[in-house]
Every structure is written in structure tokens, then in C-alpha cells.
Length: 311
Image 1 (cartoon, rainbow, N blue to C red):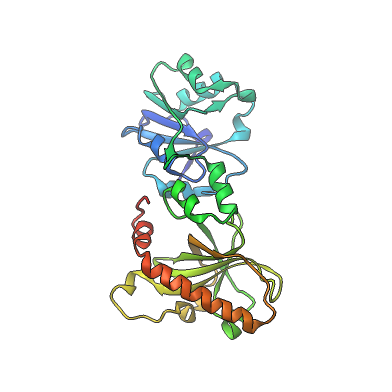
Image 2: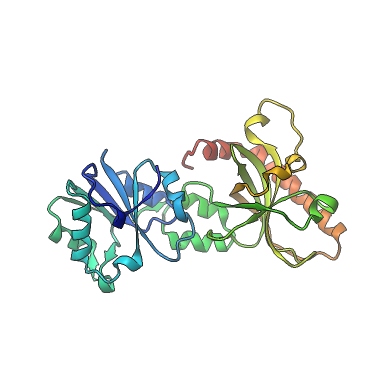
């Protein structure tokens, strides 16, 4: 089930309740709003230019409710009354509208959540600010945490491991020859966490690998920016077989141009320049040991990711 453009549909009489918002990240607070939808529910996403936590079609993967998108630029000239008139035309059997406490729309953001009741005769559910462990949940705060390398805190607010997706591309080739083999990713639309080294899981097609991921300029070698991941072991099979802990060695060139997802679990260290490849290799060995210990001690994170469980 793919997302649909709101302006491309005429009418959908199957929709009886909607929730409206930007919903970048599909975090815990968003999912709380979704919980008020009924069996005929749908999600209306107002797409903003800065969306970068769950860009494009990725949102649909985190919910079974249909998603209808509309570009902010397409409605920014409308009054709040006109915007809701458009929604009621598209969903003639609408009985319930759900929004967050800070919902605003219309020209100059003049139309608030409390104004919906003036133009809609059905039920209006205004959901108060959602907190987790005493902290308010907002996408802007999650972005800031990611940029500070505070992965654990960001993941707690998301309710899942933050992930990025990109095309697998050919790297400089130095890792396989003199350091450790990695796969390189071409990332465009996602917010990248702070530069550095991370414990991660990497998913390629139907296999999830324990992994260690680097983001940043390769300041010791070619000074090019890179997102590269060293695969440790396939997680599904790891429970049943004795496998080598360097799965990158067996990564086939045939998989170039396919896509990989990296789930970030823990920030290990900052990016830094080393005086020689030998010193870099020593630090990589330290990083690998720490990553292997982390993966061994936190196997529950694998089940959360693989079976899409909330943290």
C-alpha cells in the first residue's frame, strides 16, 4: 500500500476518521495520535521541505493506516476554513478529526485546533503534548539529538532505532586492502547523525547484519565525505550457526547498486585524524571489539528492529 496524493483523489467514502500533521519521524507522539483512529482511519501528512527523518514513502512502512500527502506549498494560500472544506469534499463520510494541541494551518497559521469545531460537526480530538520519561516529544528535538550524536536519547523519543537508507556504491577500495572492508552508501534525503563511529545494524534485502558504521570525512586518507559500514555477522542465522564475524569479506560486488539501511544504536567515538594507517587500524580494532561486545550484550535490540517492536 503506497501513499496517495490528497489532491489526486476525488472522493474516498471509506475514510471515517483522519489525523493531520507533518509526522516526520513517526515518533512515539505521532503514534499516540494514530491510536485514536478507528477502523476507517487515515493519516493526512502535510509535507514540509525540511522533512528528513522519514522522507518519501518510508512513512507508510511504520503504519497500517493509509497515508494521504499534500505539499505545504499547495495549501499555504488557503484559509483554515478552505483547507477543511477540501478535506470534507475528499472524505464525505468523515466523522472524526484528530490533531495535536499545537496544530495550526491556514494563511499566517491563523487557524488552530480549537477552530476545527467551527467548521466540522463531527468529533474533534485534540491530543495534548506527549511526554516520554518526563521529556516532551518533538521532531525538532530528535533532530538536534541526532546531530549531537545522542543516539540513545533520540531513539528513546522515536521509540525505535533511527535509520537511514541509501544506494550501495563503490568506495575508495583502501579498506579492503589495508584496513577493514566496508560497504559505502550514497545518502541524500535523510538527516545524518553527528560525524563519528557507531554501533549499528545494517539491512541488505532480507538480511540484518550486526555492523559498525562511520560517518564523516576520511581525514586520514582521501578527505572525502563517506557513510560506510563494516558488516560483522548476519543476525538471523547467528543464533544457529557459527559464522565468521567479518561478513563484509563475503559481500558480493553483485550487490552494488542495491540498497542498504543502517539502524543506529550507539555512538562510539568522534571522527579524528590519525598520523598513519597503522594507527588508524589500531583504533579500528578497538572500535570493532567495543561493537562486538555491545552487539552481544544487546541482542534484544535486534528483535525490536526485525519485528518492528517499539522500544
